[in-house]
Image (cartoon, rainbow, N blue to C red):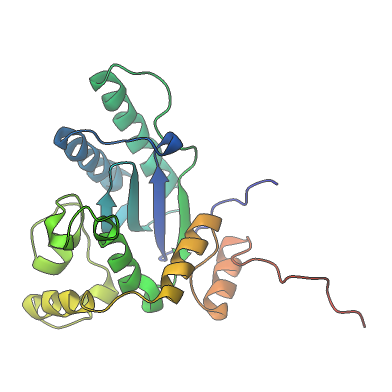
Length: 228
């Protein structure tokens, strides 16, 4: 079955995942993580991407971004991919592909899911039992979004900024969100929509995405249509 074209809707946030080929490691040293972040920073500035959250795991990457234009995200990922693969292959004397084909991306309803997706992304290392607390993992946006650590890659989203008036109150409010677990319903919805490319939101949001993007934003109803 042919893949659906990727969705784009002006001003809407996208959750992006890119995995290593055959789930093999894509980062093998601290230098690799630093170089990838530099590649992403340069490409996002050049092509018009606002990065709200990220995490670099050993064999995959999660990003939460708002592209300015239809080609902002594809050009950013292409630029990062080319520069980083050249670095990785040269450093480890290898050839061939590094990433598992196309990156996956889905539009999300920021008012409902932005903060949940930020937590989902920044808790990846905790769910993988690599660390006990998201602040203990250095290659994510948690320290910027929750502790105010400077990170040139991060652009706070309006939903995040509305958590509180002052910076300190906002950081505290964001940290409080991590005291509660993400519901199984939200976890399943995030994973399914990102894997299949459906918009993450209610029916009204999906209808908006379909109108703006010109492609389906949700699976077709099961079964045959009712007969008159």
